Image: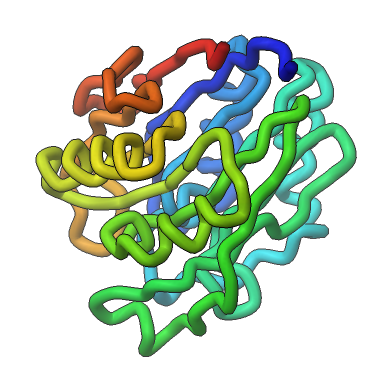
Amino acid sequence: MPVPLTLAAAQPPCTPGDVEANVAAHTRTIRAARSRMVLFPELSLSGYELDAENLEPADPRLTPLVDACAETDAVALAGAPVDSHIAMLRIDSGGVTVAYRKINLGGAEPERFKPGKEPAVITVDGRRFGLAICKDTGVPQHLADTAALGIDAYLAGVCDDDPAVVEERAHRAATAHGVWVAFASFAGPAGGGYDPAAGHSSIRTPDGFVVAQAGPEPGALARATLL
């Protein structure tokens, strides 16, 4: 049986377009979270700026994140534009890799980004985590296809300005397939006209019960232990 795992859904302050400032905010969050896994919002390292530069996993500006994960034995999932995709990066003591590319693009995103091709799962401490980014969470087929891979939890980085949308999608994701769900939702200025973004990051049990929830303010996080 997997051991208990502590998970944080974080909504760090964001400086749209400033990778170095956002890396610093993420690094502080990882160190303060006291969690095995730390989940961040969509495009959290760049802000929701559709013209943001692509980031490479080997970019030396990301090194402080690797160092923070090594110091705290954490796995972080952060958002960034990578190779013209809206991506989720996995960061741990071993470095930075692309864990998932957003499949369901919305709004003006298709003018700048390419859709990902398939759902993705990562394994941490024997648990399988399905990954999603924002609009993915509003597409039932995405959840179904991800759940079909065999998951213990569904983790999403999102950027929205309506807390009700974030709440409804998180609840539906948990109850539709009976899995833990964590949504990390941008708060405060997030770029792209999201000022403020919704915040209210949350972690839910497989029956949809909210065990941890942040408020609307930047810098807050939701933290819970998955048993």
